Amino acid sequence: MLFKNSLFDFVGATDGQFLDYYGASFVEAIRLDRSAIFSEDTLRTLLFTLAAGALIFAYIKQTERLEIIKIKAKLSKINPQLTEN
Picture 1 (cartoon, rainbow, N blue to C red):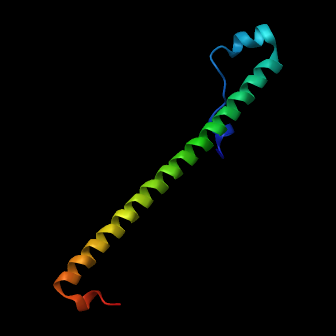
Picture 2 (cartoon, rainbow, N blue to C red):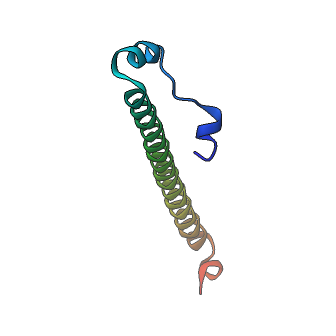
Picture 3 (tube, helix red, strand yellow):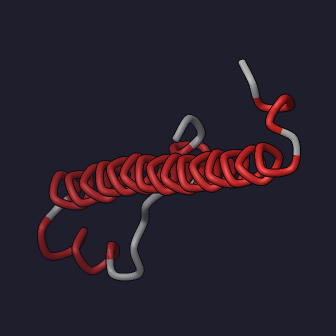
């Protein structure tokens, strides 16, 4: 998102025809709309990716916690003194 204006020019294949028919202000408005859509889509994708990563992280942490509980339960059956707090 930081380099969107330097990496992309947001020019479409039919912008030349739009320029002839509707004028420069219309083509510039379309470019600004394309830039805004790009920014919104990039932000939305980032948020979805972070949310998915957080869910995966939470799932892994919960699974690890359950495994630790299972290991402690097995150890307490073998030697109850190992799991006393």
